[in-house]
Length: 194
Image (cartoon, rainbow, N blue to C red; front, side, top):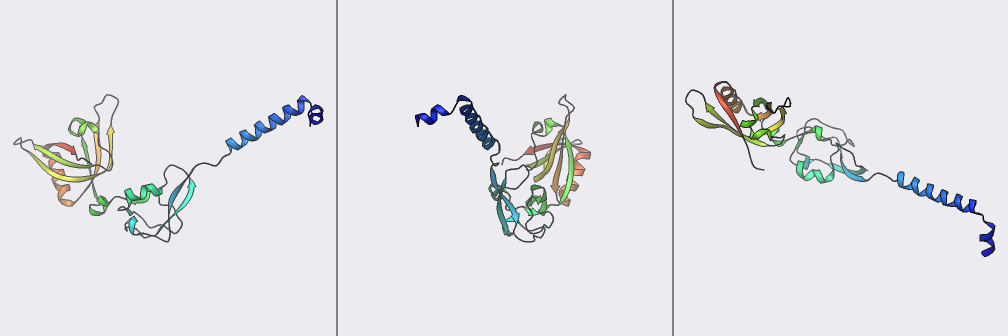
C-alpha cells in the first residue's frame, strides 16, 4: 500500500480531488425540483358540477405556481368548473367558479372611497354588506348583505385618494337597490368576518 501511495504524485491527487468536487457540484445543481400532488381530470368533466362530485386524480409534478395542489382541494371542493375540460388535463384555478357565483351569476361594479370601504382592505373572496345613507332624509339602512366580492382593487395614484373598485356577485333585486343607492345616497361597505 505504501508503495502505491509513493507512486501516485501530487498532481494525480489534485486531479482526483477536483474530479470529486466537480461530481458533487453537478449532483447538487442537477438535483430534481421538489414535487407536489397536482389535481388532474380523471375523465372528461362537464362545467357547472362541484369539484367534490367529480372524478379527479393526482400526479406528482414539479411544484409550480398556478397549479391546483391536493392540499387546495378541501378549500375549493364546493367550487364548480367554469367550462368543461378533457381527461388528463390539469385543474387550474382560473377554470374554477366560486359557489356564490353559481347562485348569483350577475356582476355589479361598485367604486367607493376607501374611508367608506374598510380603508380599502377588501379582497376577492370576501363577503360584504352594503349600507346607504339617503341624502334626502339622512337615514342609514342596509340594502344588501352577504354579497360575494369577485374582484377588488384600489385605484390609487400614490396619494392614497383612489377608490376601492369592486365586482360584486348580485341577484336582480340587489342590483336594483345598489343602482338606486349609488345615485341617491352615500354608500358604505362593511366586510364580514370570515
